[in-house]
Picture 1 (cartoon, helix red, strand yellow):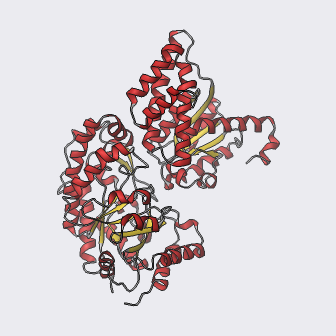
Picture 2 (cartoon, each protein chain N blue to C red; picture 1 turned 30 degrees about the horizontal axis):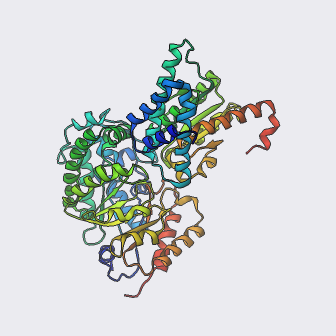
Picture 3 (spheres, rainbow over the protein chains, first blue to last red; picture 1 turned 90 degrees about the vertical axis):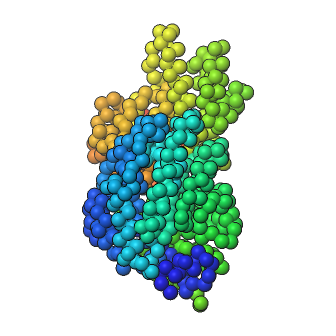
Length: 341
Length: 233
């Protein structure tokens, strides 16, 4: 059974030889190939080389397109800074307010260099691993794109104090999200994965979630021609996960490492795929023994769950994580998770 | 909660109703003045939100943001009222220095901390985003600050605060200049504060004034009794 078959069976709830697993190793590929991040996040060939190294070294069942959300901000005119050992940060948003952002033209998804980088990386990964490993198209949802264009504060201002402008911005954001998501799927992404921040009730008041965020997600997800996975975006998701189940085309959820998988499964019902439950950025802080025990416990806990994928949550696995620690996760699944077909 | 108006203010903040919040503050100030509005109406409401956030998780980050904006609104009115009566606008506490740590470009939490510190009477020098360790310590020394606050949103940039710790120690300011650390990542991983050399942290911006008060007093105590360094946490 190869990775694609394993993941597709997991989505369908069919038997697998072992549970599928993945770690967010978008950044880590650059460490494996020794590629400077300013090149890694701009040159599709360099990125793909890094992901091939990830696949060869760790054999994850899912590979990711560049986890560099700031590239979307750059496409709208925001500026970013590059660093040696972690992904770029937004330094200057393209707009100072939601009103200004709503007036910015949408970038051409077939021409803007930052978007072409992302698309070309997906195309090359999909061609390289066709029929073997599914490629996850990493992007942001329509409610989480605006901070990449105007910064967090201006988006808070609009969502909380200026609903009309927030709606205008969301309309624009939804249009981009639909075109962009379908483009990535057309380029070969098997799934879209979106960190979701602003529709989480620990971040925004229920009123904003109900009146602005969820309607935008529902309307735009319905236009996406492929499956979507919602990522917890840094907040706990399990207590509210039921609220997302009615959204169209959503097939899976990545929960926070603090979430209970059992609680999440109860909220979701039997079918959607559940991914987690190891924190990626702090992977290196545990001992190999602790990590091995944790992974084994998670696998034992989910042994009856045909829709489970062991995965890291939060951001990328940190640059200085020793490869041996990542191997602990991989080996534990490969050795302890075997199931008779 | 000390009075009904604080309860109403709390509700307005939780509903993100900035207009109503300002109306309530103005209503109290018309009878008792803005200084009194801070202590009698705003502060109890802010404390209640802090408790909700910490203990029950009922308050959202956005509601903390709304509280910060309302604190800014009230501070503007307090300062205007002081000017009107010729009382000047000299702060009561501090000075302190804050900034986002090196490579961190997420200003929102830091701005909220600045708002809550100022409303609590602190003089705040804010160096903005991507503040280098030397710039933060230089400013603290120049202004006579006993507390420097470093903010980071993500795990990757939070680890840069260690360089600020080293800079403070290298200049022989250990204990004299206390290091407050904060940001979203510390809420998720409170143990990180100690790992990167922080002297203290707070889970929310609302609790920053209490933290700075504690660190300021610790700095004073350590200066007057250097032997305390060995026993204080």
